[in-house]
Image (cartoon, one colour):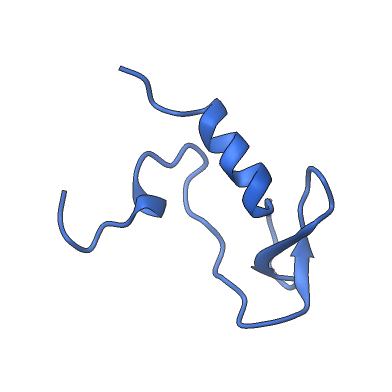
Length: 63
């Protein structure tokens, strides 16, 4: 792996992540409605850190 690859880039099941917000207002998580780290203006699926972690565990690469 190259040095510019982060953990967020590795084995993404759903593709790219939305851009991180600089501050409020934050988008609501589509699963639990808690605030996410993403801007409210982002159009698409957003998950809070907890649901994002659970989704990553559920869809983790095995092998």
